[in-house]
Length: 137
Image 1 (cartoon, rainbow, N blue to C red):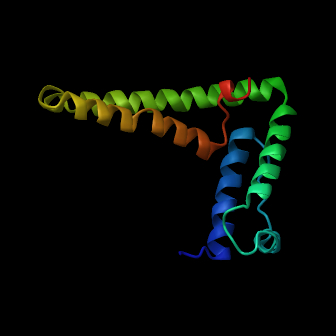
Image 2 (image 1 turned 30 degrees about the vertical axis):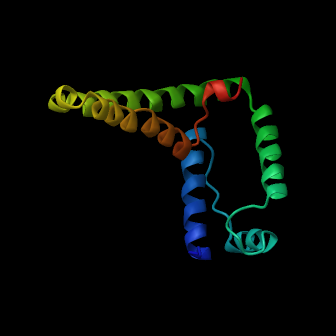
């Protein structure tokens, strides 16, 4: 089992907070290492949350999303749509660059199209902190 060091956890958390703040226009606040060690202490040193902790986190996230103003939800939905559009552009660019594959193995060509389109758009949405509009309505 691989252990995640507190410094790595702190760096990842700061990166995610900065990405979310850049999308929302908020000022970036990096958490102090003491808060991370307290969180790890609450979870018993585990990286994954226990089911009750996961449920509490999901309830807190849902409450936060429900309290968001409509214009922010719309703006984050537009950002997410742009990310999905970039994924579709990447899919067409990669798929269009291999016409020989489409002729020789159409199934593999479709797999390549699917592997680059939607997953890339969703990854961009998650990493930037944008919200899919359909996930909030």
